[in-house]
Amino acid sequence: MTMDEQQRPFRLYQRRYWNASSGTNESAVETLLKEELDELYWCDVSKSLDEKHIFMDMASKETSEVWFLATEEEESVSSSNEENMKCIAPRRNKVLYEVEHAQNRWYIWTNVDNSPNMKLMTSPAVPDSADQWNLLLDSNDEPLFDGSLDTNTFKALESVLVLKNHVVISGREEGVPRVWVYDVDGKRMRRLEFEEKDYDVGLLGHFEANATSIGVAYDSMVTPTQSIEISLSDDTERTVLKSKNVPGYQKEIYRCDRLHVLSRDGTTQIPVSVVYKRDTMEKVKNGERVPIHLYGYGSYGASIEADFRATRLPLLERGMIYVIAHIRGGGEMGRQWYEEPNGAKYLCKKNTFYDFVDVAKALVDEWKWTSSDMLSCEGRSAGGLLIGASINMAPELFRVAILGVPFVDVVVTMTDSTIPLTSGEWVEWGNPNEEKFFHYMMEYSPMNNVQKGRTYPSCWLTGGLNDPRVAYWEPAKFAATLRHENPDNPNPICMKMDLSAGHFSASDRYKYYKELAADYAFLLDQLNLV
Image 1 (tube, rainbow, N blue to C red):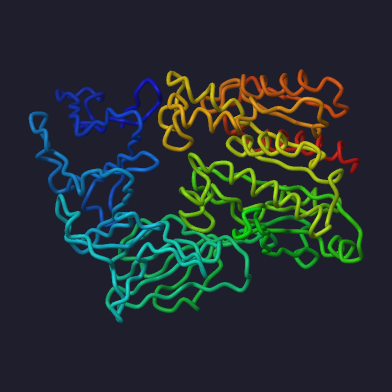
Image 2: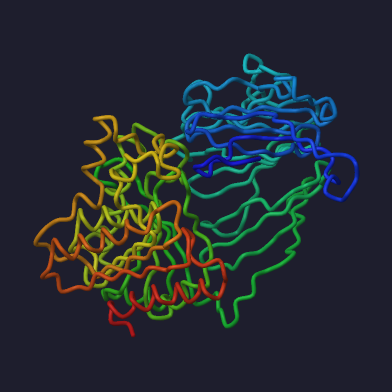
């Protein structure tokens, strides 16, 4: 797979005679199998678990197309043959699908026919099979996942692992990650159950189609990560292969909860995950207000899980409560949590910011857990956009704000298609070269909505000089704008630029901890907790 000038994977080659460089007479031969010239589509290559097919996925954030090459036909690939790879189903606007293969059948998960969530379907393993896709049914002829919106459980499919005798399905229900196991012969599906109510679980890597067990990674906000082997024939047979060792950690003195906040629209319940020391919550119950750190993201349909992070412990040990707001724009409650008209994409993106501010106000005014002078917030990348927009909407609501590599100059960046990744992002935010998107994006873009004469929170902005996703000038411009518009603001606006980092900060583990320590040092200093 090769990339174009925008660092977009777009061409797939087959290379033969890898020993050409070793001095033999044979020369390496590269044959172009497929290319994608539309800049909205990124490509990926994979092999089916049974190793019988090679897949090339071409996908934007709204539309996808999958091509395949049978591995037994690899030797017949020819540069003169334009049909070396065959299409499973031609792309259709706003239809996403992914594919796996087993027992001469395609297993497809897709939102075809405008379903709000993904369906699980099968068909014969042939090209142009879209007309033969049928829902996968259980022994009662009921579909396992029909793509509908269940407003009671918000059950949603995300990905599928197809083994010889079982189909293992990852998804969400009631906002929590779930794993289901479907017995192909018995046509029965069961959900894997765990003791805690609010947790994070996901499949580990699997490379054998004949596997009789699966591995999962399990944790919660109070349980360090465990790698667990689970039998496919009896899911009560479980072996903990490894548990993360956290020196000095005492699980019994902490607790986590899943709560809900009613959004300003009067109908949407926003899930909130909370972790704290038990003695801290006792103070709250006795009427005392305590410092709270509120985290959010809310973009790309990405879910922020209620997982374990040892790096939160320094905050909890200082009497803080750590809160994750599972706001719209993410995927916690299924695709409808992300997509129009009621999610937070395109012309309803403001729902992301409204939800976050509503959660913050609930912590202060409704639950009375904290006060504005003890409330901090944090987000990275698109989460930095969230924080920038939120402090513009309610500057006095927060005492401290951490904006990591923040995407804050939305309109200017999205107008310039020469910037890497920009054109592909038009199907996430909208294209500001179109009038309707321009005006809407101008209404929430943090750079364009800084209020004058207001007391903004203490802000800590970070950036990386080599960041290809959020250019270094975005946090620099936003920091300068915050200072310029409110010169009398008593709270500091600070920026830290890493001259050697990219978008994901330091790759070195210990440098990452140093970077995080700097973030928390600023936070704790401004909250007078040091």
